[in-house]
Length: 291
Image 1: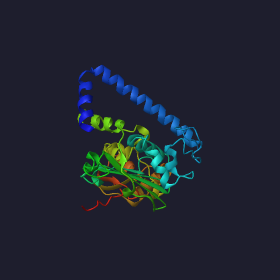
Image 2 (image 1 turned 180 degrees about the vertical axis):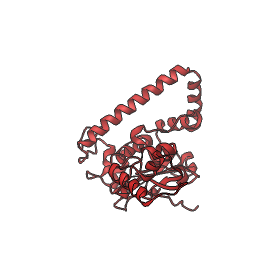
Image 3 (image 1 turned 90 degrees about the horizontal axis):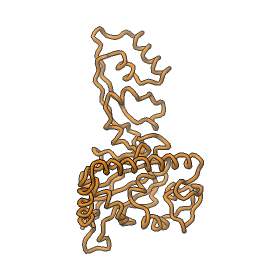
Image 4 (image 1 turned 135 degrees about the vertical axis):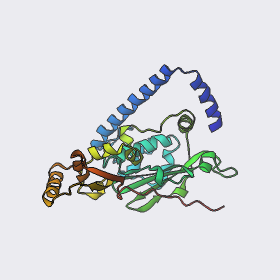
């Protein structure tokens, strides 16, 4: 499927002008912004922007992604009703949007450095007491020849209060044609895997300019809501008095600015190491079955 779509999409791209590509991108961007705005407004009222029902209800005649929040009587066997018509990208985007209603970026671990290099997809998303994870290896994407999973697919895991609800091994979830289309655009035509501002994860957060992170970060009393860990080594040519140090701490307490930010604003010579905070959820690894 991938090779066939790659060829046809490549031909389609050749026939598009730069202006046409720009217009398509602009249309998609505006639609994503509108969809997220509707989602956020509905979510704040305990409603689903996709099916129009309360998040606490379930209708097995109308499969919907809000089931995965398990505010309704969603059972493991109901998951089979979701994935035949809901794409990987739709599911991923929705869960990212949900996670960012709690703490922005921090609850979405899509960090490249923590991802298994052999995986095409390896992401963990957390919202309150629920954790969702996606995994796809190259062999998954190609399909396991000679098996019942001889089609492009991915694996999904769901944990509730740390306990198993859906395991990676339970389902081989087929990628829909729209998924393959997106993968072709990403791999062959320079498209960026983006879920809009509402779906930003830690990889985007850690890719920001260090100076921007320092200038716009605030001190956080609750470590469970912290996004970054900033280790700063400052140099004071003439030293710093206890009084001056107390003043810096007082400003931080009063304004919410980090110590690093205050020192930076004062022109202090320093070196900062910025890493994701330890409260960022770990990527749920998948144990490969031995042949």
